[in-house]
Length: 230
Image 1 (cartoon, rainbow, N blue to C red):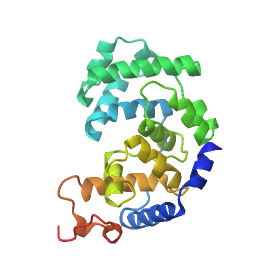
Image 2: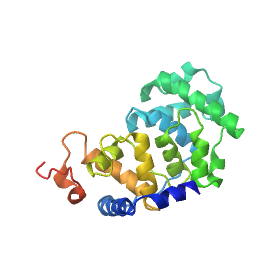
Image 3: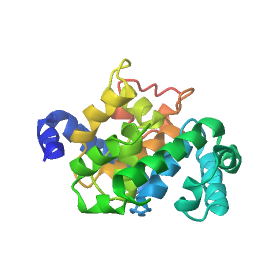
Image 4: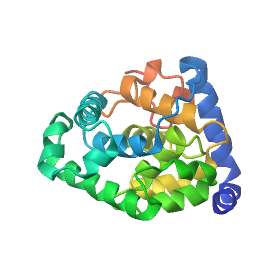
């Protein structure tokens, strides 16, 4: 299918480099096991994670599910009620309206508030179905595909983008959308989950935006931006 064709066109050198990076990171951090989530839950969680910390977004999602045990009840709520439930996640007014728009679009397209039918599609078909939902960008689509549906996809968040830029895989002008187009097809099959999560861990712990701890990094010999004296 389309995703397979894109994967075949990905430069072999980039794919090999990503495999080596994945191997080095897994030797330090291990290979996280997949933990499947409901795809609609994953979609809403990713919306709540935008422009906030994991702690805040998880708190907001837990609050939302406590107030609205089913998505049917959430879809029938007023925006102000959703907003109060997710206030801890930041940008509550914007996100409350986006959540309601998404729920309405899912029900209109799927006939119910459920995205589990996407599990029966291949990755490219499922990605195309998600692409049509309002406000759902490449990172959100990739998160749902990878974490909820167990399909080959590679989300690029701020940590992944920063680390891969420093590694010379992307240049400074590469947009987030273009980063998904470059990296996604090149990630070796079966390595998207551990590479994504381990790059995030590296970005949080060592390859930080300020004062990166290059001397402690397992990728320092591969990194043109490495400053080993730090």
